[in-house]
Length: 193
Image (cartoon, rainbow, N blue to C red):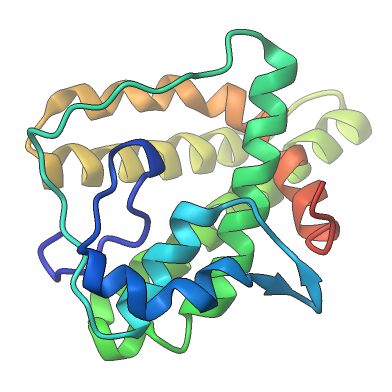
């Protein structure tokens, strides 16, 4: 928000000027990826189109919206698969745009995509060590814990809210459920199901 470039204006609470939306409606309605129609991740895609057109995207902290969320594991994983594909697709779309907006945004977006990769590599190293040697090296656990705490601390500092440190509890879910899902998403980017 500091740079007028929120990278994803969340669908349930996003609002756009009608005149801005009218300029981009054709591009928005004909979203393609690798020559195939793509209709998920539309909130992120529309946000990137707005930024490419030179509009600012802002965060309004007192906005309130109601939305439907998954209430069981299957729908949650399907939602996360769609979101992962959308994030990867639109990150590719946004990479050329980011340096025009701000260097920090480039670093942030690249970090959001490299962070899971580093976490996955650390997790695979731990698994390999466990399978081969029957134990996990202390440095692997330390690396995962450090990456988690740095990311949560930066979020807590930037938001000025210590509750963000609680996101460290999300790490096991990330390692055992979401990282394999993100790997699958990256391998099936062209799938629009």
